[in-house]
Image 1 (cartoon, rainbow, N blue to C red):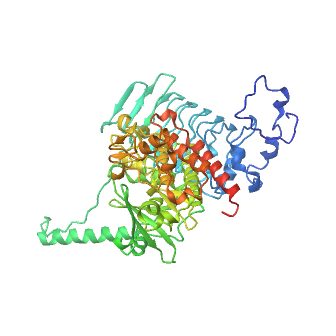
Image 2 (image 1 turned 90 degrees about the vertical axis):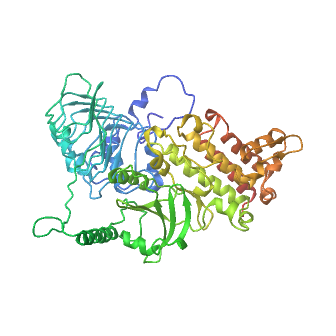
Image 3 (image 1 turned 90 degrees about the horizontal axis):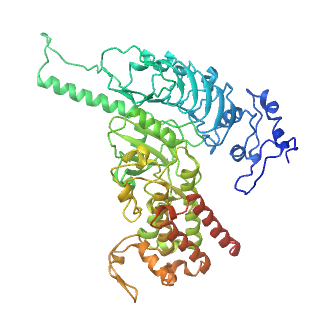
Length: 592
């Protein structure tokens, strides 16, 4: 196999191989650099059929320069390969000039080495540049101030030398992490001038005063520097009405000033643009707050299609006739515009067929609006529990399709995003359906914004009664296994047609025992333990689903809702299990 001259990469994962790697493997992919070296600027078009995304997740030879591949793919705005991390990419970065601006670059947790070229600034206007946990050496580039960066993370590398003065002139910078490198020398005054906190080893300087700090010497070989915030000084230029003596005029004049200021503030609000993300998914045309106001009839209650813990959702018909959904967020008042924009940029680039895409956002000091694709068929919760005759419309085929699709979307958040996106409020009302009853998960990432983001720990238990895993009330820590529990409750809802909680579980007598204060999870577990699992099935699907499929589906819901998080499967395994059940159904019902 190693003598195959055309072999560029190989994937031998998840096997039980042992022994040394054959010598012939030294030459695997030996011609890769020669193939691409002359194409750093004009890369050949890669056929979609070759699966470039899948190929890049495989093993790559050490002498291959993958950055050229990445730039090509990012420039083409690939759907699911926009961000690269944990891919064990090897080689050095080479500057590549592009005409297409890039929103962000994340190449964290790879094996990229060598120095970081100053030409990295040629790639476009980055907002986020994360190259942490690699093996980069040499100085940090001196041209970062030319990019509108919000977030820079070069931590856990081997950068050395002194910090460039230009780091202090990145105008939009929100966070800068250069920790765990080999930087020496002094902190440039330009950085100290706006830093709220500098952390060097065990020394912490907080709230830098007005006294100038020109430089802080760093004598150790390890400089730990974290800029956790920026003090922004805003000079407010008010319009005052004054009399001839230079004093404030009458209260009537002051009232007119307030009214005039409110008018100008409102007029400026109407002009605020809807920001988009440069993906292939976008709002039909350039929009402003005024367009959203018109599309919702001034956010009329008639257009409300959803109401939850994060805000109210309105159906909106744009000028060209297209439909979108607009979520008016409940503002927590804690996060600034830049941090909000940075978070929306990340969420806007999370694209998957089973996730409701964020098309854009509009933010002011008083309101934050999110524009989503409109899912015309409502939510799973509506069909199961709210619509008259809705449950009867959801036959076994549709329920399988909904479960499998939602699982794929949630698995993508857990296993294909970095950092991992934990939903924290998985439930039937957050699974939306299109005209063909294909499922899309919504509201991902919003709980993190509302309740805090520090390692997903919060003093408020996010989630909805009946879906919250038991450990959340003790640990206050959201995890992927918590999402699995919530999804397991959704599976039990689908197979039983029952709500997760309610009066129907009070004083339930199953002929042997009466139990009080139960819920759907407990109810199904008791029936299953007594061999009476068929009583848990919704009568609507008993005839269309085979006994084996229904039982496997029910068991999967029970396993997902195990009390101990360690006993629950990963979402990737849940997704595979549902795909197998759906495949079994399709094989016996080819016309379905």
